[in-house]
Image (cartoon, rainbow, N blue to C red):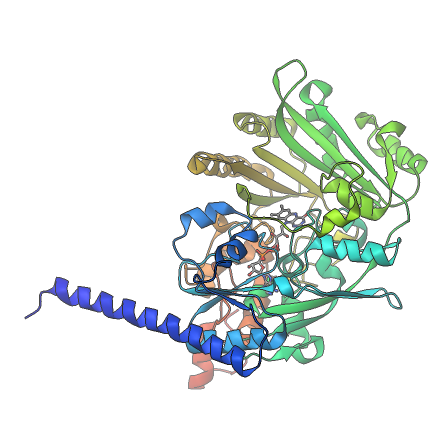
Length: 541
Ligand code: FDA
C-alpha cells in the first residue's frame, strides 16, 4: 500500500503534468488558429522568443510586482486585428487560461500583466490608431493608444479641440477610459467616461459588439466599471471638447514658512466652487528648504481655460487672494503645450515627445485614494506633514484634485463612477522606493489609517483607476462571490456595484474575464434560473 505522502506526491505530479499539457495545448491552439486565419507574423511571444522579456517589461509600469510574482505569462499576444483577439479568447476558453488585457500597463497593482495562475497577456500595443472627424468633433481611438498619442493627434488636427483625460501621456486609453479619467479640464468637461459615445468590445463569446449591439447596460458598465470585467475593449468613440487657442497655466509653490498650511486649508473652501474654467490642483511633498531645513512644499498647479491673464487674476483676487498670484506666475500657451507642462517636460520640448512610450525601467510604487467631503482642519493637515517628513525627498507625494463644476452636475448613477456631487476633492497618495518595500508600504498604510476621520465614510470611497488591493480583493484566481467583492466594490462604485453585478451576470456568466478586482457574477441568479425556483429575472442584488 502506498503511503499518503507518496499518493499526494503522485497527485501533485499528475496535476503539474496536466497543467503543463494544458499550457502546451493552449499554445498549439493559438498557433493553429492564427495560421488558419493567415494572421500576421510576430503576434505570439513565448518565453522562447528573444523579445519576450523586453515586450513584457516595456509596459510593466510597477516593477514591484515583477519581483514579487513567480508566474510569467505563457505568451504575450500583440494582436493586429480583432480576429486575433477572438482567436485568443477561443483558445483561452477551451484550456481555461486567464487573459490579462494590457493597454498602457499603468495598473497600480500590475493586474494587466501579473497573475498568480497561468495566464496570457493580450497587449493592445499594435491597436492604437486614432481617427478624428472634424465634421462632428468626434474621434475613434483604439485602446492601445497612449494619452500622449491622442493629444498629439488632436493638436495636429486643430488648435481648439482637446480631450479630457489624464496628465501623464504614457497612460493607456484602455484602462484609463474604462475606469474614469480625471484631467486638468475635468471641472469644465467632466471625465473621459463622460464623453464616450460608442465603443467596440469583444465579449467572452468572441462576438464583436458596438454600442447598439451590446445594449445600454453593457455600454454603461464599460464607462467607469473597469473594462476588464466585461470583455476586451478594442476602441472608444469620444466627443472631443473645445478649448481656447490660448490657455493659462501656473505653478506656485509655498512652504510651511510661507503659510502652506493656511493656504491648503483655504484652498479646500474654494477649489470645488470657483468657476469651472479653472482647476487648481495641489501637490504636497517634503523638501529641503533654502535654509536647509526639512519642510513641506505645497505646489498649486493650475489650468485656466476661461479668458486672459487679467480674468484669471481677477478670479484669484476674489476667491483666493492669500495665494498671492501675480502676472509673472501666469504663462500663456496652447492647450497642447499645457499637456507638456503638466507632464513635467522641460520648457520648449517638441510636442512629438508625447509619442514616446515608456521603456523598460520603471519605479516601484504604491498608490491609494480617498475622497474628501468636509475640509480637513489645520491640525489634520499638520498630521499629514509629519507623515510626509518621514519620507525622503521625491519618494512620497499627495495630490489633492478638486471636484465640483461639471463633475458635480452628473448624477451618481449616470456612469458606474459614483464620485460626483458632495466631493470637494480626491486625494491621491503615492510612495515610491528603491529598496525596503515593506517600510514604504507600512508608511502609506499608516498614513491612510491616520486619514480615516477626515475622509468619506460608509463607505470610505476610492477611485478604481488608482487601483488598491488593500481596500478589498477577490481571490488570486479572480473567482469570488458577491459578499467578498462587495467589500471593495461599494468603495469604488457605491450602489452602482449592484448594477455592475447584474450586467456582469448577463454578459459574462462564466466569469471568463476576471482578476483580483473584477466584478463578480451573481451565482444564485443562475441557480434559481436553472432550477426554476424563483422568478428568472430576479437578482439577489
Ligand atoms: P493597464 O494596461 O495596466 O490597464 C489597467 C486595467 O484596465 C487592467 O485591469 C487592464 O486589464 C484593464 N484594461 C486595459 N486595457 C483594456 C482593454 N482594452 N479592455 C479591457 N480592459 C482593459 N488617472 C487619472 O484619472 N488621471 C491622471 O492624471 C492619471 N495619471 C496617472 C499617472 C501615472 C504615472 C499612473 C501610473 C497612473 C495615472 N492614472 C491617472 C491612473 C490611470 O488612469 C490608471 O492606472 C489606468 O487604469 C491605466 O490604464 P492603462 O491602460 O495604462 O493600464
